[in-house]
Image (cartoon, rainbow, N blue to C red; front, side):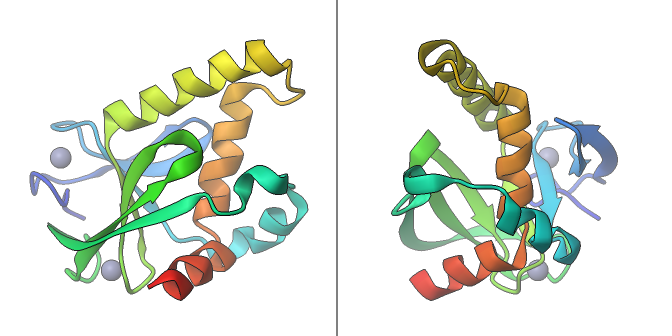
Length: 144
Ligand SMILES: [Zn+2]
Ligand SMILES: [Zn+2]
């Protein structure tokens, strides 16, 4: 599996408790679609904050899906102001390393502000799991 940005081999690794395919060159990661996590997805309650949290830029990127070579589409996850790219054939997501770190920092700040029950890292893990679920991919498709 090759990095969509720099074409070097991606290495399977565990990051934020989730198995990802990591690029050692640009430090981005590919998150594979996971059918099995739909159940968990339904159990986790994102509440009102989740609604209307997706925004799209209409332009496709020039990056290719590591699995099918389709051009990745960019979308924005407004809740954390993060931009990600996803395969229109539902193979997964691309996330830049600095985005990953930035969102986690943001969540850690919220953790202090709101005294949330969930730890930031756990919440980020849950968010990433949610994004790989079939229901999330359906939401993305519906917005196109
Ligand atoms: Zn790379
Ligand atoms: Zn694909």
